[in-house]
Every structure is written in structure tokens, then in C-alpha cells.
Amino acid sequence: VQLQASGGGLVQSGDSLRLSCAASGHTYSSFYMGWFRQAPGKEREFVASINLSGGSTYYPDSVKGRFTISKDNTKNTVYLQMSSLKPEDTAVYYCAASGLLLPSTPTSIISDWGQGTLVTVSS
Image (cartoon, rainbow, N blue to C red; front, side):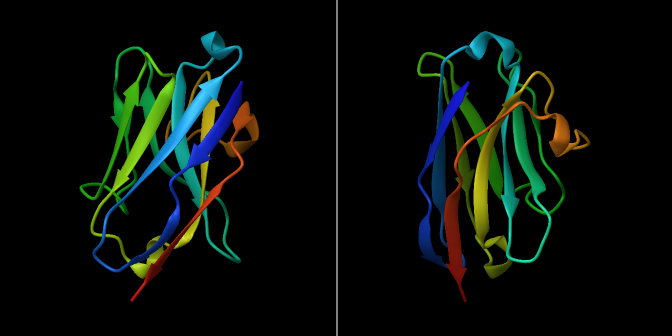
């Protein structure tokens, strides 16, 4: 599966931003898609995921209520709508696809990654 992420940029604290991730290739094996982020000097962390058939969504407490993941199966695309952004949300955001992608899923077993898109939130 090839993943193309887009939508990052520089915004101010409190602003909103929407990221997109378009999947192509052998997408039939990816039951979940989602987003991770990695800030400088920190480990990559789970941000959101969605089951591509049932639509169940998963978020960590740090973004719950501010971020919303959604999907458009006709376009093989998932979106991450980010609202009330904070400076601590600054990171490179990576799109991911896998047979399983839950908050507890180790990054080592995630099968496909996008190239990352930088989100910078200024205070």
C-alpha cells in the first residue's frame, strides 16, 4: 500500500487544520488506517485510527474531543480534522495503514507508512 499524506502547515494556537491521506495499491489488506505523530526528540505516538469497514474510531486522551478521523472509502482516503490546536501538537504527522491499528498496536508491526507532513502550531 502506498500512502500519500498532505495538509500540514503553520498555524496559530487555537486554529484548525485538516490532514489527508490517500491510499493506493493493494489496499484490501489494510483494515485500519490512522495517524501517528513524532515531535523532535520524542517517540512516535498514536494519534487516531479508524476501522475502514465498520467505522470505529480510536483516540488517545491527549487529542480526544479536538481531533476527528474520518474516511471516504470511495477515494481510499482518510482525514484528520484537528481543532483547538496547541503548540504541543507540533510534530511530523504520519499516515499509517495496517491489518490492525489500535492505540496499543506496536509501531513495529504496522505494515505501511506515509511520508509524513509537518504541523507547526505557534503560540
